[in-house]
Image 1 (cartoon, rainbow, N blue to C red):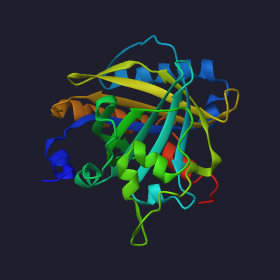
Image 2: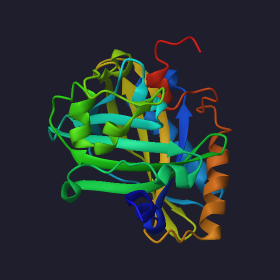
Image 3: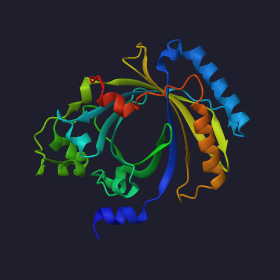
Length: 272
């Protein structure tokens, strides 16, 4: 039994995250608009029997960069390689993620960081609008502020990156990697209310991306997530979460053709 077989047999879907892209143009005057948005979310939640409780925490400020080869070999192998730096704590983490609508295909991907003792590995379910399900198998570890410059350097952090295949051949470790479409996003994460959905407490958040600290929002996302390490999600929870998720898509804040964050980065210079 190889490593991927062992992973697939033991891993549980430890969380389910629902993601809704919002109209970023509505959040130029961010602070007062956020309060208006949150009031509407609470009112909607109340209508469908979801209790809310405010969370008080300092917004997170992070710099987010997606790294890939010039011809996107990492992405075309079904992987996402991300560097994220907490600007307040001065800590940098790297994530290698495999996403697929096929749970077992995502789970079979080698996203294991080299240092198992200083890493986090998990399998999650990502749900995007209108109700599109993908499974996300990710490995996370801390790392240097300066990102790796070649595929070989990156593979010393995540050995799976040394197994990439293009046109029937293993990619050379000398291939350069750099920020996708030269983009570095300034990210703000603002905690939304805690949501009592069925028999679980879900965390919610509003995420903004801008071009620099003072830049206008170019991406706005609302998400909520509930977790269970045993993957024991009740019927009441998943039904109520689906109702809430679909109800949010009828609000004026919702951007039906909004691109998820990864897609936004990879298509930044594309007309499509």
